[in-house]
Length: 162
Ligand code: DLZ
Image (cartoon, rainbow, N blue to C red; front, side, top):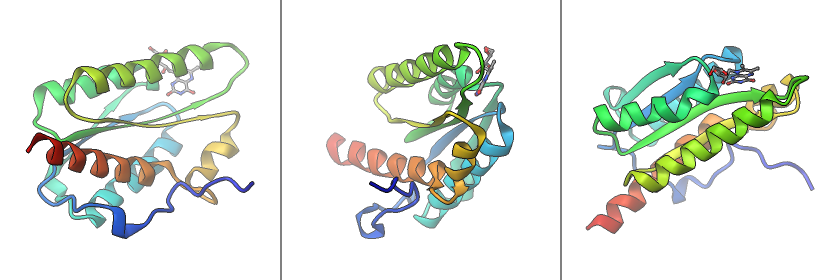
């Protein structure tokens, strides 16, 4: 079965992002990949109506720091959703496993503790090529997927709170 292209989505099923405010927290580790995830996420948010001023971008050193960076945005800004962008590539040691566990559980915990969505836009790959393919390459851009998810979840939150 072919792998899904991460940028594929039905535009008709994406709510407007007008008047929504988004935090984006980006890992500096594997910058050549995460900068492309950021480009994808920002362009997709804007495509669906988010204003430039309503996209708050901050960086952290590595993916392990994404949950706390995301929490800072949620605490100190008034955002509808926070998108977490990172890339963890398998190396020779078990470090990969520990970082992936930490960032995954950290982001999940934030989702359940705050009343806003925190989006898991983290690539966890076996090698550099798999990451390139998913950061604007032949399998789309995980940043696009994360932005679409953020808009959908922020819209759901607004519907539910009425
Ligand atoms: C240390 C480390 C390693 C080996 N690999 C990655 C990686 O592939 N992707 C990533 O985002 N971060 C990596 N890091 C850095 C950790 O996320 C973290 O910044 C440090 O362990 C300091 O807490």
